[in-house]
Image 1 (cartoon, rainbow, N blue to C red):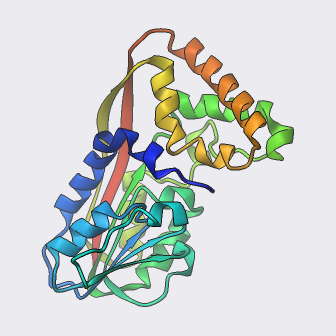
Image 2: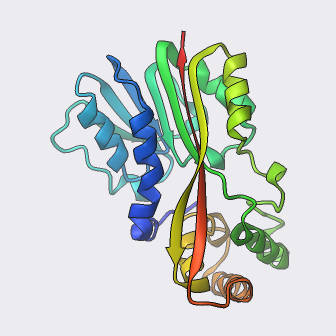
Length: 256
């Protein structure tokens, strides 16, 4: 996928609220090795490095475009690397991930995989969006079905909760308990966002949910896809104001 950091950051304040809550949930421990999975442009990785100056901090992301905006200046214990979350190596005192794991399948298996990389006494801290059953995603799936030939059948989001890999807070907590985790906290929180009508929803999704579709289409088909999606959004939200219930799941756990 080809990510556009400028588009992603058009809604920087709204997108940053959940990660600030996740950062506040972190226990202050003497971390030595920290990894931020799916670090994007690295602002929150830098926050981790500033908060825990005694730790070596790695920001890992698959997008060269995002990493090009990452800044490690003045923090010799901070570095950024391009890589795949599923190929993570090493062990860490803190594995942190903000709005990244939703792109990966089978979260029960994924948690077990990541848990193996957490050192004894270490912490896993994750935040993922849970808006996969929102009308904006349902209409995106309908548009993708209309463009099935151009997308070769690809649809990123389904219409039902079970079509997403994202679990409920209870399911994450239960899985972490199965793995032997301690001090488990798992919550769901709605972050209210007000957007300027259907065009506002489109601008919001351009930074995230639309990316895998437009990455698979040429410019002309991409414009047609976007227009068809916008038509559906306008039918759903004909007014000039949309209340978007931006829902996230956050959880932390400590390894004994």
